[in-house]
Amino acid sequence: MDLFRRSLAEAIGTFALVFAGCGAIMVNAQGDALGHVGIAITFGLVIMVMIFALGHVSGAHFNPAVSLAFFLTRHLPLRDLLAFWGGQMAGALLAAALLRQSLGMTADLGITLPRGTDGQAFVWETVLTFFLMFVIMAVATDDRAVGANAAIAIGATVGLDAMFGGPITGASMNPARSLAPALVSGEMSHLWLYIAAPLLGAALGALAYQFVRGERPRVGNMP
Image (cartoon, rainbow, N blue to C red; front, side, top):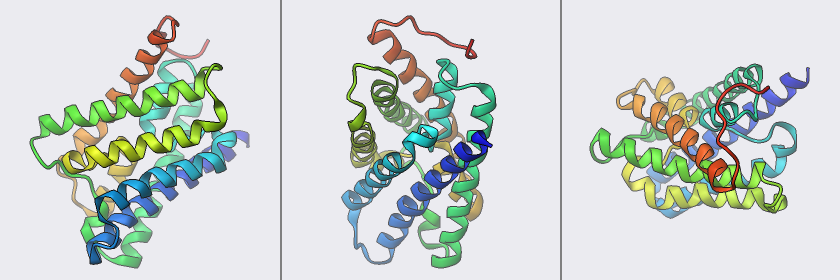
């Protein structure tokens, strides 16, 4: 039951991310009410408030790449990883379906597409997710960090990445955020890079922080 509650928290948080973030893209496409900066701020704010609301319940991953990185660095058991992935995808798919039902196919439900080549987008998504996971590891796993500011730090990182990376790749950093709108809209071109690059970037970011803080990088299941 405890794992179910934590997975449900992951579903709710990921639902909020996709509904607010992709919803902002769709609303902006109808009248340019938010602009690129407004969309980036929306993504950052929804992550921040959901971490404040649910961080104490599930750890507030809301991102399969983040959960994988925690698993690889022995902060999350395999059973929890699989349950979190299920919750995250369920929340993301429900949000994308509700957006389609309420606003139609505006902006293809906010799908992420590269503005340049796939290679360029892969590099950028990897680096953007590296930044995000590096900050998450700092505020979530290191006792020397100020825990009360974790939500602000992580939300600000998402907003920052979206601010300068959005025009290049859409700044997904999250397989669930990209996969759900793609599946519901039926537009799945370039989807592979929005799955592979965040997974790689998150793993590298987590291992890099372990090394920087003086802990020997560990990869594998929890003991």
